[in-house]
Length: 56
Image: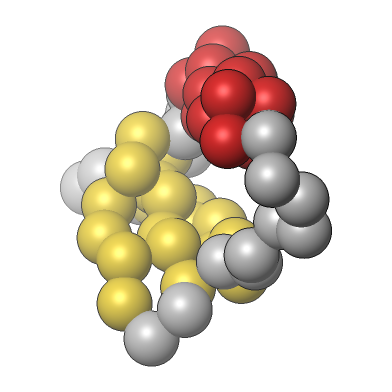
């Protein structure tokens, strides 16, 4: 039976006017999560949910 773990990340609005910088920071954060094996699952109510399978 497969087992999973979940990561909940609160969505926050970054302060500042540099949209490119905000996008780059978000991309770097998501790439780091991907490198750690996390996959995007869903978003809602100000929270993003990521999932990854546990090694048995």
